[in-house]
Length: 276
Image (cartoon, rainbow, N blue to C red):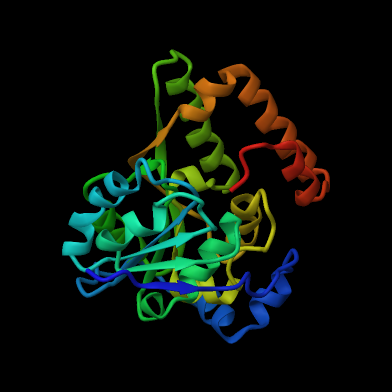
């Protein structure tokens, strides 16, 4: 396969959206109205999925990451890799195993928005945002299609399992899954997926360097509660084990509490060294 790289800018910046703005848009009204439909519908067999993978300096692992997505491509999913300015061979190594490789301004929110704007993603029904260190379950696409075929639900996430040797990691994953169900807030590690129309109505992720998943969840849950799939994605525990489990827990809670009380995500990003 020839190397196909497109360059995308940072795109339109987003501030915190009000619920009223979402409901004023044509797509937003359509999604809100769909919630009033009674009952579930049969699973659509013709649904199309785009898997958007934001990456940065993932050359050592990107080939194995994309190899695991090959079965989904065989079933019709489109895999779009969005590089944030890697200084290694990530782009070159990704090209043979992706439907499209883009280069965008650094930042997960910007990269994911660029992937969603890509022409290949325009005609799909569902967008799934996957971190490079997260592995989807084998039937992830079918689980998503079954879930979103229930029209009143337009977005969601998977349960998460944290890969690693530390004995507290399974408990941390359980807490993440419970907290997400209780709050309606989903994290990027849980592989957020969203109906294309709902994503358009919400105008994508806010252009912030941190907490873009939390901010998106707050707006998305005004359209409908998130689908909490029990199928598990497996995410790397390298951050936890490298920085220390308890130290990482304290850091994440401090950041989220600060954001909850109105701290600027740009200031928080300067306090968090692993921002992508």
